[in-house]
Image: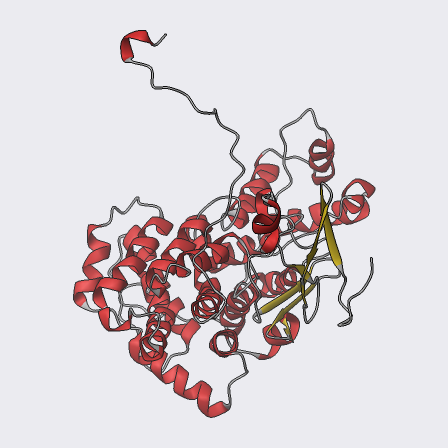
Length: 435
């Protein structure tokens, strides 16, 4: 393929006897993008790419992934460094603003978050009217939507001060909302945030503290929880993030857009994957299946046995987040004195996969979901809360992506094309003539 003067590939598309030269958008790293915008106007054709396997819907400065070699970076910083050295709120500021904050900037942000974690008594009534058996993600989406009604001064997506306030309110109130969803399901009284505690300490206390007792956990508990939130903070243009951006393209406010992301995340093919892994490991244990035999069943196309927590749409090598979570899982269980057979089974399943040509050739490596559920389970979270925890971690990424989309000068309302394959023109048939 020839190169243009700027060093980018020269792309020519031949349609019948006509040639169309297409521009190429330069990437800082990774794949450059062929600009397909002139295609319809110049040729009368559109591109068809189900599932967006090869189509970039936007340019973005937030997250970079190289799935072939297992790279994940937020604003250029490797995930391994951020997980080791940063707090969740520090990473949130990095994603939202673009740069690591100074000590003063981080302290000011933490102070604002601490101030706004409280939910008014009127807002708390939302949880009392939701059925206790409602799925936590249904309640979470409803509560986030209601924020648009409680905080009208923060709705204008084109007002920087309103966007700043909405950003703080979302980050501050999300852990309180999720803790209330859990406590409501358990039949426990709702607790107020406590000034002076860290973000994750406040969340854990509001979630697990019992009447008349003080919640206390070892430092490794809070470190692991913070690490998991950081690892989930953003992941490029996944289903839920793309939903947030698409809704935001209509200039919908932050709350409505994030609620759409929550809806997308609730699907078992997206946010529910870690629960599916736990179900798989439990199935192996309860049926006393040898992990090697289970993996043999996975390879047998005549069975319906599926391997969960392996492989990824983007990663074709070991998910860098999974490597970090694996270490955290062992540390948390040891610190909490928990002996979980599921962790041992997970180790065995992973070992079989990494040493079996069938899985290696198909590049099926553990992803971030494989060990995450084991950690949450050891901490005391039921499986139904795994996806809300995912949403708590992903929130800064959703906010950053929404904000980037709102201020994009080239942005237009999202409106994908389609290739129509239905019936051609037909005349209406009266009821008595239909068969």
